Amino acid sequence: MKSIDEKIAEAEAEWRSYRYRYAGVRESAGQLFRAVLRSAGKRMNCAVRNICPVSIYPVRKRVKFHPSYDETKVNLVVSLTSTDKRIKYILPTLYSLVSQTRKPDLIVLWLGRNKAYPKGMLSKIRETGILIRFREDLGPNTKYLYAFNEYDRDVIITVDDDIIYHKDMTEELYRAYLKHPEAVTARRVHKIRFDRDRKPVRYKDWIWEYRDAVSPAHDLFATGVGGVLYPPAVMSYICRESKDFLKVCPKADDIWLKFCELKNGIRVFAVPDAGFHKDSVNLRTLKTSLAEKNIDRGRNDRYLRSCSQYFGFKDDLCERILGEL
Image (cartoon, rainbow, N blue to C red; front, side, top):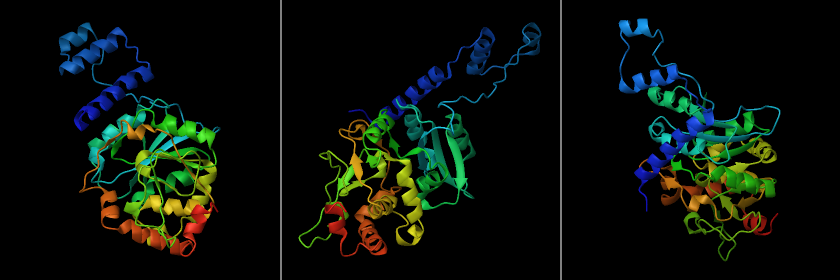
């Protein structure tokens, strides 16, 4: 089994190969000459400049890694966020996103404004062709809320910043979306379980990474770590509900989104045999992972209770889910 370092190296190599294939680089003799000089770390002296008066200093040319965003059509947009502490580890994730077999029309990284990010890292991110946009930091909800409002006519895939995604991630999600355009589509889902009193059991006792679903259902819980696709119609419902999430459920965006879906009768579809289970690499650590705090410390269960009460599902959550509304 390949190590994480080997996976990162492969992702970077594939990205670099794709970069030049996609850009259609055809270097002339002069361009090739300058490239050789740059790689050797040399500078042309005055005598050589007189013989070959060509500027050898690198010209930073923006390479478009994705087709231009077209406002006249429905685009495929990938949206994610990161923090000032985690952004230095984000490049492997971005390399895997720009190397997808089904190219997104746009990849947007939302960052909290008024925070200190390494300038060198921001430059490297922009070189991948990914759009960086600064907004008010809403915690994990930053990943989806701004994209849902600003790209509300598009199809949006939300992803996490600490996963090297399988190269077929966007293609798998998009194909499933075409079959079930009315549902939220996810590559990793949990199945919600209830006890004898028809109350939901603890989050950690649900059926994790459930793979036997054959159709969209309310008892499937989409997890953002695998990539989740939201159709345009679904996003409008979620934005309408997103008023008090910072008070009710500030650190568990998956739970808040699930209750928004339940409130509006939106089902979740699980991609069969998704690539998340095959080749994706989890880069998160216990020190930086929000999931570890939410699950092991029982925070998700508190968020489930608070959301159930907020949305008015306190006594009939089981009926709403198992009764399929």
